[in-house]
Amino acid sequence: MMKTSRSGHYYKSKNKKGDGFLLKKIREVATEFPCYGYRRVTAELRRNGIMVNRKRIQRIMVQNGLLCTIRRKYRVTTNSKHGLPKYPNLIKGLIPVRTDELWHSDITYIRLEAGFAYLAAIIDGFSRKVVGYALGRTLSPVLTIAASNDAIRTRNTASLTHHSDQGFQYCSREYIKILKSNGIAISMSGKANPYDNAKMESFFRTLKVEEVYMSEYRTYEDVLNCIPYFIEEVYNSKRLHSSLGYMPPEEFEDKFNKKRSHQLVPT
Image 1 (cartoon, rainbow, N blue to C red):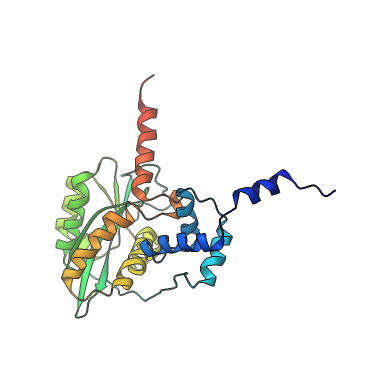
Image 2: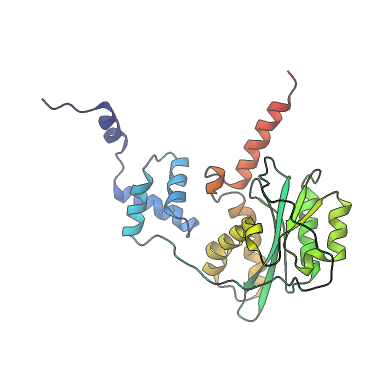
């Protein structure tokens, strides 16, 4: 008589969901997050109580043409050819271990039917949360100043380092004055070295692929209506981040801060 292992019996009894059921659930996730890959889809399903192997999800998504492959080139928004003071790179080898230890800042463009809009954003290097942002029609320092004020208004700037490229917006006297007046250390990437600010590049890639390219904005008003929603209601609060254990940035921050507060309670 042939024996069946307990592990094999357990797998068969637990894995009752057919491909049709899983395809329906995958499409529900894809409707809200059209550019999720199979790893994030698997993580989202597991968060909702559907325990399934990610290779199975990959197979179903490939068979049904549900893998996103959008890629586009980027437009340069940095001009470091100016006579303003520049600052050294302070974050080489730095791995943040708490929120508001390191902020990354940058600017990207958003193509419109006629012309461009621009987004200046700041993300927390630990949680990947967008902590400040601003939208505008030009690349003036007014844009980056608005983003920095947005971040400083709600975050803790004690023992904080701000990292950016050497663009004139970040080297402007007004911008540097804001950072210094809030006790923020200033760090800048080397010339033409985007890898020093890779976390910002990653966020902008996500924004472009999962929102901008999917929407094809016509007017600046379209940008004002859609980008804040994506940042606040999708990226920060719902979108799963692989480097955060497949949690959204806000959930990751909340769990970290709760754990930290418990550790600080005197016994």
